[in-house]
Length: 150
Image (cartoon, rainbow, N blue to C red; front, side):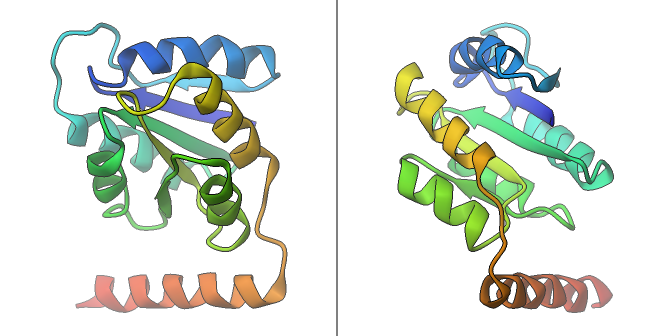
């Protein structure tokens, strides 16, 4: 799977720890930055990742900032993106199975590496398969399409 990865300075350390975990799991990882702990603005990185995911259907994104909230808000502004902030295994599974999330956001100042790895592993192993959930995701896409026409 192609994983487009990005972080701001608040998520840099966690991103750097997750990158080899993802690569060792057999994923192709594209790192969109940041590449140091120097301060950067999370909307810039979140947009880069979300935009790339929206243009690469076979990919998913993982964005890490201090709390994960700002990146989720930013990514969800990009058409075709369904970003979910997940801080536990239940929301990781639910976001994929119920909402067909294609971007995961994490809080680098909230999660330890062990839990973050388990969340990522769970998130990547799930998909939206049930008809009732697919119907609901289509409604989300319909709302998005209506708003884009305005």
